[in-house]
Image 1 (cartoon, one colour):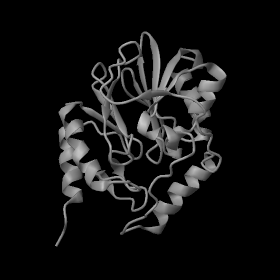
Image 2 (spheres, one colour):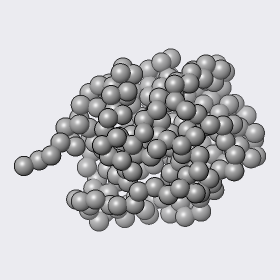
Image 3 (tube, helix red, strand yellow):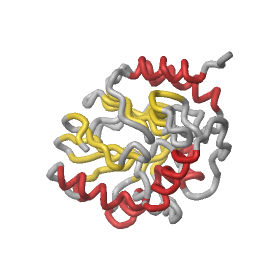
Image 4 (cartoon, one colour):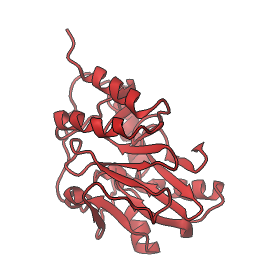
Length: 242
């Protein structure tokens, strides 16, 4: 799905990854689920590209629903995969994420999320065996989209956002969501399964400072009303009620 020139989504509002495209090729941000490989090929074809145009995969964190086809691209096509050093163990199948469901869950969104994940190979995660590590603050100007790495700890220790000023877009993984996979609630809000919720909220200041128009979550509809407004709404959604 093309969002704007040079910016595409693979997947849907349940689980998504993103393509940053310029005349040098493609940077993939997150790798969805294992079964999204076919969707990736279709999206590349629609853009007039092939798997040989992919220059890198950057993972916003090491959770299984973001690893998807990353190892396959690394192993079979020599595509380098980048992940924050603090999430490397998780991306290799070691450290495990938070699993508390929290309050307000509704049966249908939960069934839809897990049903979709299973249908896309979510029960057969292929973990990384090798990766390039990041620490936050890097400018990867040699890659398509000239991505900048912004440390966003909270959802996981090594969560990052990936900013492309060229595309006026920032991919945020699970630093926030625009559709809660457990409640079905729409709009910018904190993501579930977050290791350190207070830390995740603190990290949002870095997202707001990006001034990007497009905010691209791993779950939910892409947001094109600006990072600062998305952050404002996440904070409002997280405020105590009553």
